Image (cartoon, rainbow, N blue to C red; front, side, top):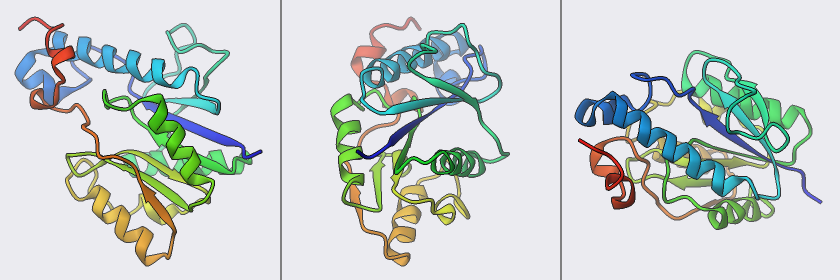
Length: 201
């Protein structure tokens, strides 16, 4: 049976340091509250997923938080840029012997367990899988072999990341599958009504 790993990139929740673009219009307290709801959603859709899981923390590993230590391995992000951090985490996954590695963040309220299962199913017959986000980035990236170039020479947090990654796939001759396009929550306009109703301006 394929040995699958889901990597979850996680920013330690600190007031004024998460969802700064949301905070610009909604304030730091609301931005943190929304971030925590997004994290809770991410945990809910991953906790029953039948793969191994590791949470990569941005600043420090918290053994006492809401990520269950028996269900989620915990590690620290390594690198300066997002690309370096992603490359390191995925490299570690393959070094540990996993046959398929996928990485997500905790910004996508539209993501669900079915889509995650579809991603790993896609990796059983493809070299790569990508979940494009409406802002031009991606909410999920999965690989069946380590391809460091995928994480290099990208303008992170811009609208070109997904298209540049797809170009890499094409140029390297990788067989890939695209998942449904979803919305990452970065600015107020991205907020689903369900989250918007729960905050106080």
